[in-house]
Structure formats: C-alpha cells, structure tokens
Length: 396
Image (cartoon, rainbow, N blue to C red):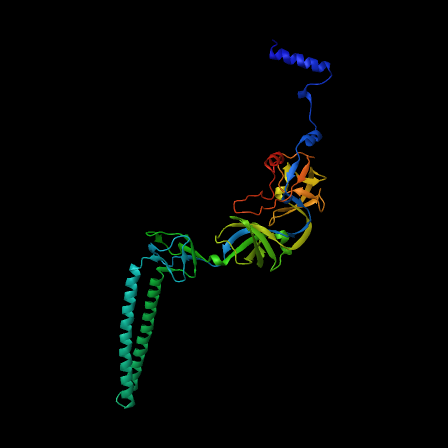
C-alpha cells in the first residue's frame, strides 16, 4: 500500500503528463470570483437613488452652551459659614435662603445702633418741646429772641444726630441681611463652593445659580469669515451629549471686537423653538447658514475609505461596481458629503456596504414583504431583510 506522500507525488505526475495543472496552482481572477459569487439579494430601502440636495454653506461656529441668566453669589462680609441649604442641581425660587453666615457680632452692632437711635430720638423730642415752649413765650413777650434761637439750634442738632443714628442702624441691619444669601431669581444651583464651617472672606464665591430656561449658544467664528455674518441668520449645530438632536438657532449679536488671543469673533445664538439643553458648559459645533448650495450628496455610511480615497458601491446593470468618488464639503447637520466627481444624478448606490462585497458581483432587488392578514400570532418577513442564505452571502 502506497504511503500518502508517494501517492500525492504519483497523482501530480499523472496530471502533469496529461497537461493539466493541479487545482492548487489555479489563480482565480476578480472576474471569475464575481461570476462564481452568489447573487446579492438587496431590499429596496438598502439602495439610494442620488438626486440634487440642498445643503447649508457658511462659516463654522464652535463654542459652548451657557445660560444668559446666571449669578455668582459672593460673600459681602467676612464671617463663618453656618449652613448651606441647597445642593448642586436643586431648583430654587427667587428669595429662597441658600447660605447662612454667622451674624453674632453683627447682631450686637445692630442692637447698639438701635439703642443709639432710640436715645437720639428722645433727645430730639425733648429739644423740640423746649423750642416750641420758648417760641410760645417769646410770642407773649415773656422770653428773649436769643433764648428761642438757642433752643432752635439745639433742636436742629438733635435732629441731625437722630438722622445719623437711624442711618447707622439701617446700615447695621443691612449688614445682618447680608449674612443670608438668597436666590436672585428662579433657577437651579449650578455650583456649590462652600460647606458649613468654612471661613468666608470678603468677595469669596459661595454658590452659583443659573436659569436653565435661558440657554444660548456662545460661539466663535474665524475672523476671516466675519464678513459673511449677519443678524438673524440661521445656525445649525450639534451639542456634545445630544448626538441624535439637530439644534437650530438665530444669530442675535455679533461682537465688534475679535478675541485678542484667538483672533475669533464671538457670536451669540438664541435657540429657535422650545427644545434646548438643560446643562450648561456643553461643547457645541455647527455652521452659520449664509448660502444654500445644490449638489449630489451621499451619507457617510455609504462610503468606504482606503487611505485618502473614498469609494461607493454603485448598482448598475444587475451588478454592483466599486466606484471611486471625489468628495467636497461636509454638511455637519445632515452628516452628508458633497460628491464633486465619480457619480451623476439618478445613480443608485448601496446605503450600507460591507467589506465582503466583490466588484462586479450580481445583485437582485427583493420586493418588500406584504404583512399576512390573520390573527395576532401570524408572522411575516420584515421589509428590508433577505433570506438567511442570501444575507450571509451578501453581508448586508
């Protein structure tokens, strides 16, 4: 009995003698590979027919989402923090107590000022009565004019002392009120800076409050494109953290001075509509719509890239062809690229090609399945899906 290696050698020799190369030496060409590959079964919704689309063209704008109404509440006197009543993210109403500072020393000042004002008030009342008495006596000729004038001077001095004492008492009470930090408007606490026991120096940040209903897009535009900007222009942009939402706004204000370090111009954009992010500080990027351009456009998902080259799979004549395309500008709002070369209007391409496709492979379009009319338990093939065997062959 021949050994396996010797048997293989004999078979190879016989094949060589017959002029036929072994099967392992045959090299499959791309055309033969496409001809031997099974036909793709593609749903109609997986094929896109290209047409002319409109896209926004204009300067790019980048920045962040910030509230228009925001307040950094700081200490107006030096004191110890006794209590913080609100945490980050809690909603507040106008006048709500947020932070309380120690007012022990100020209470003594208020009490002393009130006592001084009370004594000054009594002195003024006494001086007023004395003046009125001498005025009556002088009218009857029972007192000299000099005595009445002296009483009037004493009355006026007592009145001045009373006004000064009341002012000091009001200042002391105002200082006491500053130990209670209250919300200036309805909103939420965005940043708590202190805790009970902290020493609050004059001007120290205590807590921040913002109004989430007053969000706006504070963006920057390159100074090279500022000549294209106008008030009330439409802005389309995306916000980090909201990947599935396309936001739209209007230019409200354009700064008249460029940033000294970046040489960019600040642009304020108001949200159009009710929907807006509820979180401040999120990064945003978009485009100011200065002009509208018509062009052929393809989605990013329909492109396959090899280095710096881009390709699409065109459906034509019952087969798919790998077609090189040249791309232009990108519409960030729609996620579409402008096609400047390689395709023409009414060309059909695959929306989501895979790496298993073969150039020249045959393709068949399936018909959308019609749902069966029956009971709740009846099942039908979902439109856009091929049979398991065809799906495995096409990779879609």
